[in-house]
Length: 601
Picture 1 (tube, rainbow, N blue to C red):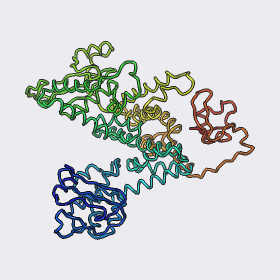
Picture 2: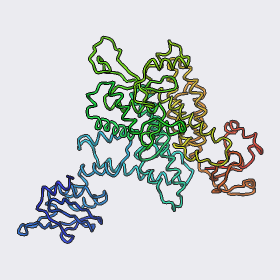
Picture 3: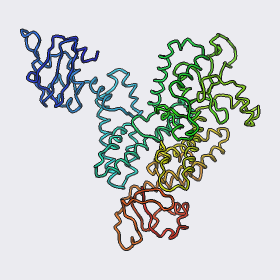
Picture 4: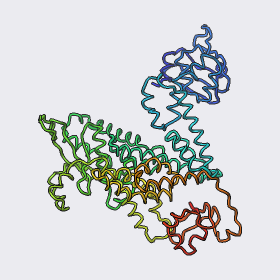
């Protein structure tokens, strides 16, 4: 029974109220009905709140004022009101003010119903679960409301002018998930809005910027040896490359929780099974629910490396690494110790028995830390994989016997993240090679999801942050590896994500403080901030612009590379820095730097 119907059950003498006998605050209608008892219908047709006479079923009884109703009923009524109506009601009497504007119950309810995404600094789940009096819920609601208003104002500025555009984008990004819902609404602005394309573009750009920093922080925690669950570490790729209300590592966790509950519901005696039976039962459950790897024809599809997409898709197509990661994350939720095992190019799972027990559930006390274990390949089947078969595979790969133990042991979460990066890179390269030489925008490029540039950019960031883990014992090798990734990151940054300049400041420059690259990066970032702070003059066409053939807003198709776009600006000559001109070999072009250069989208 709902809270409101239970209240009516407690007060069965209350009968239907007509609009003549009840005058309250808002223009909507709230109906609370319990068919098993006489019911109460509250009509809210006006903006006035007066003392209200409630007709009772016994006409001989004295009339009762609206404010004489039990506090539980009044609170149930006010829970149906929006914030503006609550504020209006609070101005009518001290009692109503206590039950509305001063009521933490109502403001907590509004925080839970009006907002779905919160910055991690709020620890909103802990606050909701904790004592009501520990949180100023009204202040929290007002803070979120102000952030959303500020987000809209900053986005309006970003859309209307280039002046301080990067600064405004990063100010919104500092709000994190507190700004996410406001940006999602801007993404859904009407098609007939005057600035619809620009508004959707920049709302999307800011959302991506927010998601990227969240993913980067997850990998940074992993690099600092913090305890990061495998599904969260891999789910950071989803967060980095995708946007949407349902894109979040918490959502991935909820989907895995649902699978775990499904296992325990379908196998009521699961807790009583031996570890060996639990392991095979869990693999069977996944395969019965569509987690059967991926057909060869679509093995290199980009989405197969994104754990969030795999969990939410109908097909659940995934690479072996993701299949093993889902199995391990699910096993942890049902009390089974399973870990990934990267045996050569394929990823299996290692399932361990509890200490002092074997896989058949028999008590076998031992003085050593060695535990009984088994191998599984959830990508292919639910049957146990024999260690001898894996050893034979390694011998066929010419892996020396002394090195085989490394491949037969469990793999770190960091290595799983780096392997995923390499898988994503391979998928992107496969798509691009397939379309090499083709003209126009091909269907497979359009349908590549997540976006290829975002996905590739994410792999560079993860390898830059975690790549040193491959050379933990040799710092110079780790630094060399990072230097190799840096040009690729800067190329994507300059081409697609210039508003990531603060991410360079916060996460990349500290990696190279003592290196020559550090000072050059610092100067580059400072120059970007200076240029962003300058008001850009409007350049009108004159005789100097005679060689500018295309106009702002004009659609085009590139003659050599065949991509399509729209002109967003132009320069009568190359206006980029000398370093960029040299890196891009501009002077080798026909006409060199002294010809029109276009800004395109």
